[in-house]
Length: 224
Image (cartoon, rainbow, N blue to C red):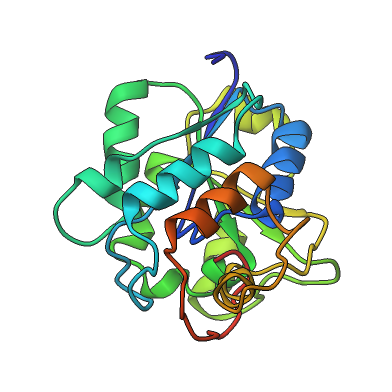
């Protein structure tokens, strides 16, 4: 694992991980010349229903999916921490570990739009840069607290991400793959093919573990 260049974290349920997650990480890594991307599976999400697969199974699927991707790793600190999976706590820990290294948090569009409901969200720019991956044609908020946040922190020069440890907001259009974890769970539960939606090694774990057996369909979300 390289330590050159900015460190980015991508949090989420990864229930299961799929090619939408991986493609977003790859595009952002290329555009911003990230040194590494760490996938951080959440344990107790405060703003969404409980996960279906357990933390150990989701971690196994992530590790399987990332085989051969030397710039990626899995960080299980939130699974080991008691209490809700507050992103600000994860960033505080990483900032203490990484000193003045450029640190970035990758967010999907839906997550960014709900940022105002996050625990201590105003402190995030003090700890890291924010990289918002958005769908083609999407425009950031122009008013309200998020509009003010965008106006204060928006950056467009990638050099700023490398020159400073935190504080910038970058908004980048990525390829939109119409894949959702909820749809994959439903396919696996129904015994239907989920080929080409996630890496084969991760799919095999999802099937063999039985973690989604009998699971009903759930509402689709962008990156979860």
